[in-house]
Structures are given as C-alpha cells and as structure tokens.
Image 1 (cartoon, one colour):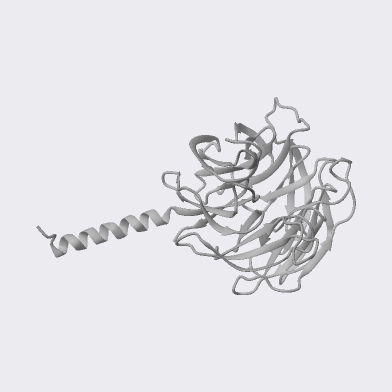
Image 2 (cartoon, rainbow, N blue to C red):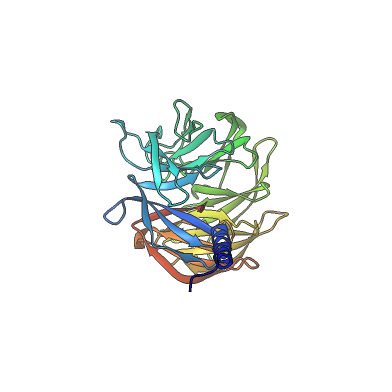
Length: 382
C-alpha cells in the first residue's frame, strides 16, 4: 500500500525536525598536526554534541606541519601556522589561509604567506577579521598580516623582533614568541615570550600594532610564558608557563592595557612536584567562564581549576590522565560539555565529558587515531 499524501508530509516534517535538531548540536572538529608517516595535514571529525559521539577523522587539507590552527570570527575561514624550515627560498616559516566547507568539512587553500620568522607556532584573528596575528617561536618575533575580505592573506603588515634572554640558560638564551592574540575589546594584542618571561602588550587599531605603555608584564623568572586565556568577562588573564608548570593570573586594565599580578599557582596537583620532564602546554577557559583547563606534558595530564569571578584566583579541582602521551593542545566544544585532548606522542586524541557544575572531567572512552595531533578547534556544522 502506498503511503498517503498526508503521511508523506508528516514524514517529511519529522525528517526536517530531526535534521534541524541534529544540526543545531553538530560541530566540525579540526585537528592541527605535525606531519609525519601518520599525518598529512589538517584533519576533521564531526561531533554530535548531544551524545559526544565523534566520527572517524578525515583529511581536510594536505599541508606541511600545520601545528596550530585558528578561525575567523564568522568561522568561514581557517588559518594555520606551518612550522616549516624554509618558505619560498627563505629561512622562514609559513601561514596558510583556507575556506571552510561547513557541509563536508573540507578546506580549500586560498593562499600562503611567509610568517616573517622561523618556527611559527601560533596564529589568531582579531575580532574585526582585519589581521592575522602570528607568533614565531624559533626567531622570537611576531607579525600582523592583513586579511582580505575574501579571507585570503594580504600583503604588508607589522613585524616586531623580540630581544633578550631569561634565567633558564638551556631554554631562554634568546626570545621565543609562543602566542599572540587580541584582547576581548580588540583594542590591544598580547604576545607570550617564553624566552624572556614576558607578556608583550601592543595597541591594536585597524589591524596595525604599536607598542603599548607599559610595553610588557613579567611572569616568574625561568618559568617561560607560553599561552594565555582571558576570562569570559575580560577582567583577568591566565598565563600558562611552560617550564615552571605554573599559571600566572593577572588582572587586566582594559583602559590602559596593563597587566597587574594576582597570583601564580602550580598547574600540577598539590602533591606533585615539578620535574625536568614536565612542560605545561595549553590553557583554556570554559564557555561558562567558571573553570580553567591546562595540559601538562610529561605528567601527561589535564588539570582543572575553579576561577573566582571576583578575584580571578584559581582553586585546584582535579587532575586527570590526558588519554595519551604529551598532551599538547586541547579544545572545548561551544556547548561546554566535551573536552578533547591532542596527544602528540601517542598519535591520538581523547574525549572527556565535562560536568558543567563542577568542571570535572570524565573519560568517554572515545579516541581517534591521528598522527602527531597538536591543536583542536570547533566549527558549527551546517
């Protein structure tokens, strides 16, 4: 018996409702990697945020050593720091711009440019999508590359070479820029220099950087400022220090671009001392702003902290195995329910469920095999 017209309409409506519900909670998950025998570039999976289910990873774009990736504010474009030794015959790294196919997850290369220095390790886009901010670890420099309206990398831009050294003679004989990002108001840009224990501060206007006054803040000597994350209200900055395995929190003066020290705490559990084999890596604030998550390599763990909204101070909540070796980066989906670690040396990413009330993590048992994963970013799936 053939279904009636009304039955067909009912089925169609039910299908559309299902698709709308599913797509409302679906995300593309992109993974930056170091390319090797197991990796050819940037990979993509799909996350059902209702269940936490991840699809098998697929190659989204073939590109060399896209060790860190980031997105435009409208999520139409993805940018990668290509940590290569030479580009166009120069001893510099590269950055790549891609257009995102939100239906299938594939990335279309728009263009590539020099990063302006050696060993690019971080990229970010300002809130107006006028400029890509690049940190070059190897040469200890940062560059602001103009962005065209079509998402491609433009010509020109600012360049700043850092100078100096730090207390750790093995790791800090020269500057090592490790991150650059705009503040929430988009009036300033901050850059972490692992080599000099400084967080550099620049004014940002129309995609142009100029040194601020004060020009920087410092973290404890020899600790190695690596990455930072602003609190959701923009009042505090949490800096993770690589060698010290610590988190330094500053109060952020958004009018003058000044960082005022609040405290420095260990990124490890209270009963664990820092060892030479331990190096802190990534730091993120939960979407609800209540918790801070940090990875520590060597100890191969993720630490969870509760963030006080008034003081910015952190209180230790939990430390949990990262699900693999050398957890370099991590990502939290926009709903705040799922956290994914990128475990570089075990060639896998692992997923955790987040208790949004306590911040605590629970392994879901899901992992994806990806060669040398480094970074994790989420994009709304059409």
